[in-house]
Amino acid sequence: MSTKLWVLIISLAIVTVTALATKDVYNVNVTNNKNFGECMTNETFFTLYYFLNDAPGNGTSHCYGKCAENWPPFYVEDLHVNPELNPNDFTVIKRDDGSKQLAYKGWPLYLYSRDTEAYQTNGQGVNGVWFIINPTEFPPKDS
Image 1 (cartoon, rainbow, N blue to C red):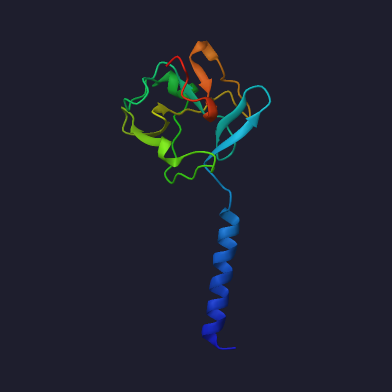
Image 2 (cartoon, helix red, strand yellow):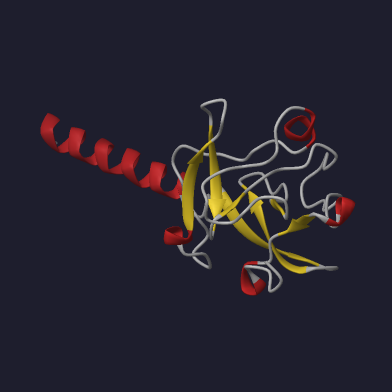
C-alpha cells in the first residue's frame, strides 16, 4: 500500500474514534429524577438550578458573594445540549465581576455546593427560592 493510502486510513480512523468518543457527551443534559421528573444537569450530571430572585431575561444575576459560594454560577464555553433541549433557549449573561454565566429561557443557571454527588437535588426548594429546572415545565408559571 502507498504511504498516502496509509495516511488516509489512519486519518479516517482517528476521526472515527474521536467522533465515537464525543458521541452523546453533552454539557447540559436532561435526566429523570424519581421525585421531580425531568431535570437539567451539567456534563457530570450535577443538577442545575434557577433562583426566583433573578429577573428572567434581563441578563443579570442577583447571586454574589456568599450566595455564589453556595450556588456557583454555571457556565460552559462550548455549549453542547442534549437533543431534548433547544440550544436557542440558552444565552450567556455577563456577571458584575466580568465572568460569564449560562441562562436558560432567560433564567441564570447555578449549581449547588451541597450536591456532592451526581443526580442529587439537595437544592430543590431551598429558602423557597431555589429550584431545579424541569425543561418540560419551564419557565415556572408564577414568574
